[in-house]
Image (tube, rainbow over all chains, first blue to last red; front, top):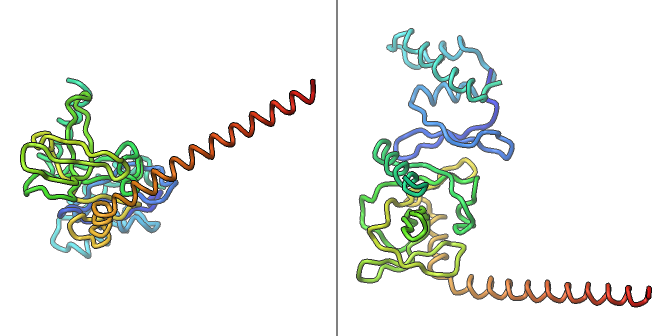
Length: 87
Length: 169
């Protein structure tokens, strides 16, 4: 799975905001992301899997509890999927 | 609650909750800077003194409390300041109390442009404020010329039609 359209993540007054680019992005609006969300978003730019994302996050955040990471990944993937932003 | 009041409540609520409000703009009065449906504006609370060149969000009470995002062009002494859209030709006196937020930046084709940090934006603001007379002169001339050409084409077309009809008779 990966993101359906190209997003650019900008830092706006200390907050990560993702905005779709391109005329045919099919997505109008913006997405607020926390630090983990930003990492997941960047990983989803290329074709990947849920397991690969969790693996990458484990390397970046070795102290984080696995269940917490899984919950974050599932939460974001679920939201993106329900908005039709994943292929 | 009217539509205007609801919009005001939404913007102020968002600012209070997140420190900023983000929304798409509607209309053409801030072209070429903000394009309807493409650019997202980021609105910040009024925490500093407003200055000439700032783009502010204000309420128009006489038009069902609609919200307008235009640029301050003059701050005279008193309660009112003069505000103008980048693509309009008139200065609107606005009561300071009706200004509710200031533009902190905007997303243009996905990229965030910070009004305070972007050199390009500062140059654009300078042109908007100091070269207004040129814009007004040239665009007004173009509009007049455009109207004249349109009229001539219309007369020409009518003339040809009359001519053709006459010949047929």
